[in-house]
Amino acid sequence: IKWLLDHVKCARKRAVRGELAFGNIDSFLIWRLTGGKLHSRDATNASRTMLFNIETNGWDEELLRLLDVPAALLPEVKDCAADFGMTEAELFGAAIPIRGVAGDQHAATIGQACFEPGMLKSTYGTGCFALLKTGADLVRSKNRLLTTIAYRLDGKTTYALEGSIFVAGAAVQWLRDGLRLFKSASETGALAKTADPTQSVYMVPAFVGLGAPWWDAEARGAIFGLTRDAGLPEIAAATYDACALQTRDLIEAMRLDAPTAFHAEAQLRIDGGMSKSAWFSQRLSDLTGLPVHRAAYQEATALGAALFAGVGAGIYDSLEAAIAVRPAAQALAPGVSVHVREAAYARWLDAVPRVRT
Image (cartoon, rainbow, N blue to C red):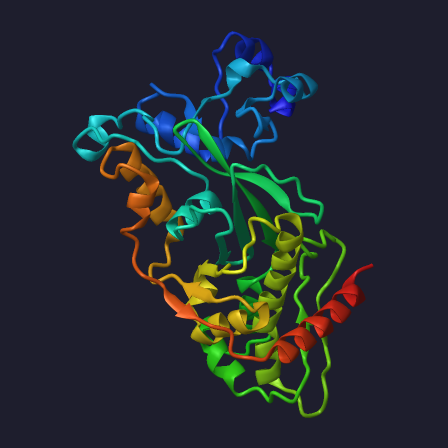
């Protein structure tokens, strides 16, 4: 925003006069759908702009001053279930109320029914995003996680801890497109099933560095433990294991940051492309030691936004009532001993430092 205001002729003067508006895709869509009647967004999307104070739930005056951004430029911030206006009638044949707005991972959290403190969800796409609901407590991480708004309803903010993995499904894509091991990513599980369990092959998929909790942009990927008896099945299995072990990294950081929120009955609710693999989902449970609930309906983000809209439109009288209609998930329990799990994690923790500069 600052660059645009500094380099586009007359932009700053027009911004101060309230003649310009700035927002992300959510506020842009609301603006376009309502025919320019509303310049607004929800608290979760606002929290990702580096201009929003997640404690006071408003645009941060100090940050606006430091970055020299006029407040008149920014949208009104509302709850996730709120009145965001009506669409123009000619767009869809009738005016439709907009009642639910949320950011990607925040909506997925609700799509996964994580509405109580201690509930944990993880979405496995190209990368991976895990959120632990901490409730009304704004937990400041000491283990390199992010504190974020999970959602805001009735003016009350619910917080979460978030961890990001840069490479999850992208590692499977690399097996398919880079190594050409198979034609379809769905074949990974079948190949991994044939891996020799006596081989200790480990992949650290730091193709673009490592995300939380390491945050090392200079790290690069590697495969360790290769022997003459190791082959393509072992590499496929190691790729899935890497995603599970990176998730374990996030879980351990969350345990340390929020011991009261992360309770003994914790479970991991998963969605995204990789969760379609039964083999990966079971391996995830094995290596994290948590029960895994695999979503029956994969589009958790769309579902979460729809549930917010249901609350906002009065179809449901509460978020809990909205969540109750979501499809049941498949439950998986850890199937390996603690010794096997901890030995695998120890080897992972030995491998990670080797790829860091």
